Length: 223
Image (cartoon, rainbow, N blue to C red; front, side, top):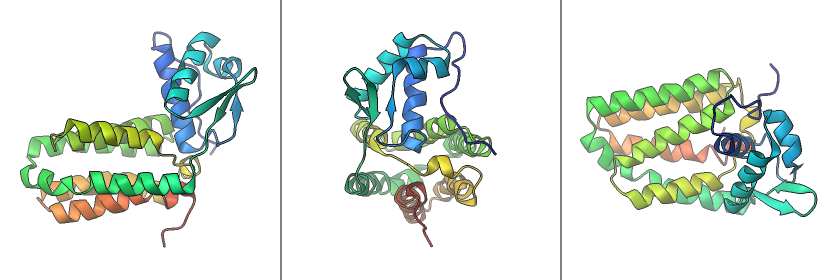
């Protein structure tokens, strides 16, 4: 299988800046664009099949998000997230996202579980076709919708920001692996536990699931 890429021509009629920003962000998060890589707006524009203007606008937004630094007269350099930074982000996410599963499990209704299953399947489908951008978008959609059930808007905003800072540098190399399939399937298992009102089990599973960022997604064994 050829290496997956999130940087492909943009469909006509798409929101160019937003589409480019999402695609480049996915490439950075997944490790397709490695830390330290220097990219230019004209080069990316050629790959996307668009003009340089929306690409430059997208890259400036990514600079505000901490994904790239501007290199004068050269372009943009992908920023590095240190192991300590990543450890802190993951541990904080585990502390914020996992405990609410207990309350969510107590009030889980069949209709909500069915909605979550559709979102979980979108993650599985994206993994199967090696679409990294779709995988990350579907994953974000699932987890933020789950937190909406907790009813704390500030928590959702904080988690969204933390997820944007996360780098899963080994994800691009996980396409087609058993580990990626297992991680994708864990979203269905999480819904199973919530529908069974097993809050403790859901909390434990989500804690382990987020921990994959420090394991598989960082190129480390979890055995």
